[in-house]
Length: 102
Image: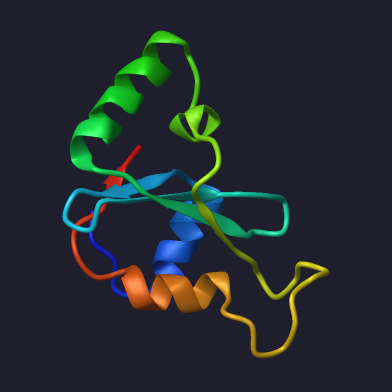
């Protein structure tokens, strides 16, 4: 899928599904009830393996991941400070290209 804006991408992540970009090798998903997002740099081969494992165990890919990701908060999150890099900033920087539902 392709997005026309970072806002559109953020809406999909926080309300519909996790996303993966084969081109960028980035997996992104909704992290908490405050609409923060988390992303991981995952190579295509590893992502394919994670998808298979998740499907076999009836889990989400995000549930199989450990340390190594990055969290980008929404301004509604209590620890967010003015000037922090937000979830929308991240989506504005990354919405281009092809993304697939995970």
